[in-house]
Image (cartoon, rainbow, N blue to C red; front, side):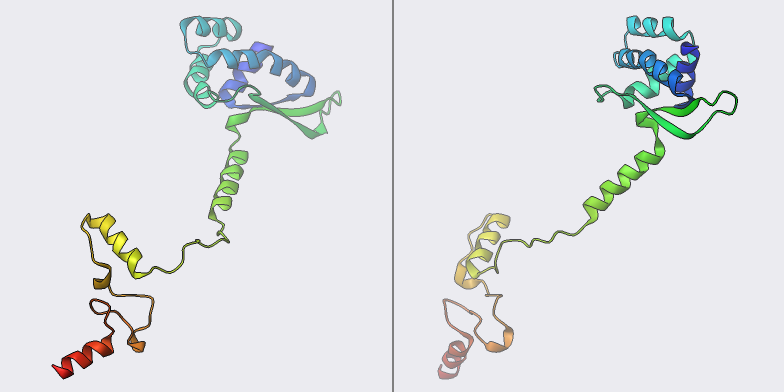
Amino acid sequence: MLSNMSSSLILYKRVTTTVAKAKALRKYIEPLLTKSKDDTTHSRRMVFAALQDKESIKELFGNISGRIANRPGGYTRILKLSDTRLGDNAEMCIIELVDFNETLMDAKTAAAEKATATTRRSRSRGGKKTAGDDATSATEVTGEAVAPAAVVEQSAPADTATETVKDGESREEAKADEAGA
């Protein structure tokens, strides 16, 4: 019975059964899942001796072992159902493979996306750039040295006429020099 239930769990990823059978199945299938992580001939033969089903062996070593490779244990989950079986009033549950529950996987990815999509409240700690900072950034990009006086200061508004034109002269001084010359 455990071999057949294990094959069904491997093929369908979820089985509805009684709580007692699910707990017994968990003890039976967890070592088989651990052996499937190591894809050798010996481990395949050991798992086949327990399951006796070629299709479940292909599924186990093909798809399932890749998804549980990083998990140290706890490959199955038992979810108890609220209803009981009509005939004997036995408690029912669902036993499933943990990495194959699409509903919970979608919820986890949605929560992860929501966590990364939130805005950060902190601002960058850098202040406004000065003429010296622009010169060093130009040096980093082009590899050539740029004189700091030749770079136009960008922090001052254009209508105040305090932009640096050349060698530290303001625009008004440059106009006075041009008019006087």
